[in-house]
Length: 377
Image 1 (cartoon, helix red, strand yellow):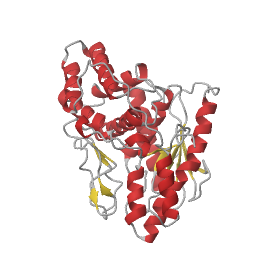
Image 2: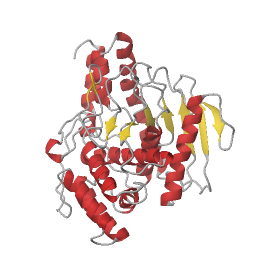
Image 3: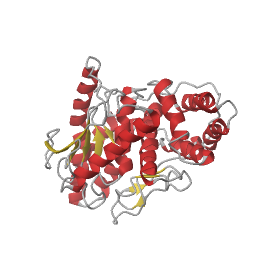
């Protein structure tokens, strides 16, 4: 197996689905296993698209262009067109949520950062809702957004949270900019960058300042059956949920608790709590609307300075540098960036050290799925 094949960029981390597959009812186990095993198929599709992308240069498109399709609980993409740009609202709430959410994300990137869609070239924002039956995830497949309806037991429909929409679409921005490797610290930065801008689009939609925001990711996604408030908390990583079936939120908020693992591509959904919390501290320290200054610093750093191997220390140094370039050396904004990283145990200006690259990041989940199908765990 190629351990470096492009993984699927999903909002629900594999450790959550694995817990359901181990501890849920028979029906819940089937839904979780279906979501886990679907990843390999979709990952192959995404890898093929990424490889083709290097020779595919679309003509620039002016303005927002959204299209929302329905898979009608099948898995063929994109499905049946339900709403195109400028069309009136649909009777289907998921269609309208996908349409409005992708529009809000387009507006954030265009109005605040002058970026013309995900690729900077007016990429059409295609979304498919009602993917598969009771599908417990949402993902960016390299070309478009896809949303499941959820199982109704743990997860609601995946279009219900605008930060989930923003998170997944931002994977598209990363794809066209730094293209951070999806493993270990670069992968955790990839996930964190998506959480940051998912939270920012929610805050901008609600008109919230940094101190007014809840800094939760996917708060609307969890049903009343779950003991928890969201998928992740940027304000307090590790506290988002503690559920008998889903397990306990494993995210650390400090480098002293960094999780070294082969699962989840080296813990990309786990260790993202560290840069998430750093950004939260920065944004609150700067005050006002987080998308204006803190968001701009991270966007410019990721667009111009991050590369596929950028790790936490490099991200700290680069965001600190960009803050000085944008707002002045020694400015409140630059000091806020330094404080944010310091709060999670990272000192700006330190020379980055090479990160270990453990093998088997993708092999372990596959083995786990096979063991469940064989009745062994």
